[in-house]
Length: 137
Image (cartoon, rainbow, N blue to C red; front, side, top):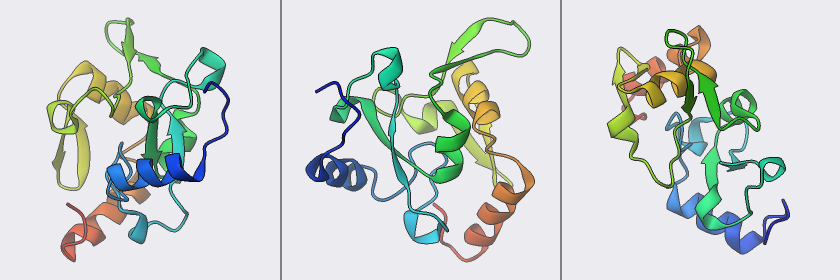
């Protein structure tokens, strides 16, 4: 299937697989103001398919900042760096959390953290509050 229609069954699979957490910033749906969305990792307009292997659960913030991007430009090397792909990469290999900030361990992690604005003040504050209550990771 190549359209952007996502069946109810496929939505349920994506949500269950992600344990209701954004697969980019890891915030749980229960602690998000807006309903998490199904993200095409590679957007349909770039040839991405509407299949389980190309879909991720994303909070509204991550999905809006990511848009149809699948790469970014490294600020220092000026090279193209792919964004984190939760279907073929492991979160802990690319990111770590320190003082409620999500930091990149790799160029992929650094580029993704920057493009998806993981560490803007309101998102860090949200994680701090959740972490203080034992509700984030």
